[in-house]
Length: 307
Image (cartoon, rainbow, N blue to C red):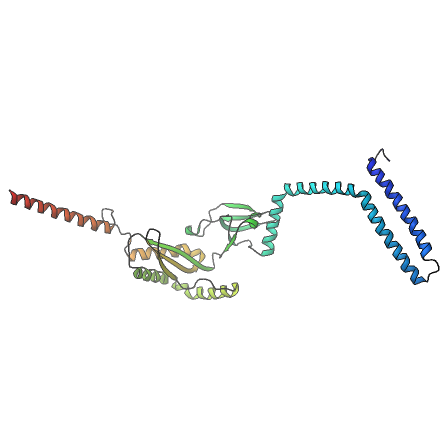
């Protein structure tokens, strides 16, 4: 036996066989002694007790005999498991992220999401990765860039996932109008509200119904469906008008541009004079030229009188 099995293992096997044999013999003797002249019910109870005690002694003995080998085996198994986890950590995180997406119903194919700083539409997702069609920033419209991005599902465990409204859904859209030169705030707000009403009036009723449906489905209220305009100032003291409109996601960029062009044209903001200078600057230059001419005429009159 020592030719094929290490000596320590062979010794442990020998001790184990001796222990099993002794316990078996002891059990037979104990059953013969304690069950003699006993009724059948008492005999069964005593045999069960002797067998249970023998099993406990056998388990404790085997543990004592093989304890060092069990410890070595557990250490080896732990090292193997640690190496396996380290080698497959990314795959495990990706699989965990996929389980989180599936269990939490985070998104599905066709949803528009923002994940890890990337904005796009989900076109495929699997156990280890999610593929999205990249979209530009909200200020540049809702059309895709033509590029696809494959993200590992592990980012679902470390980042924030934002699921956006679909292109054919109504949703709030916000933008800011910053004015360089002072304007009457009431006049600008009225112009913005009028321009928004003209641009959104045709879909106002449908938008209101969709807003009620979305609020009931989500269980909480969202901004809309009426237009909201508020005025603040920037860090440099410029007037800023914050506008919220409720419209189709795919039309939001075009409606924003329509409103801005209408308001800027109505208020003559950014108007350019013939020489390419703003109208306000043209008036200031004209006033300055007039003052210079008046100064020159006064200087000539004074010189004539002195002569």
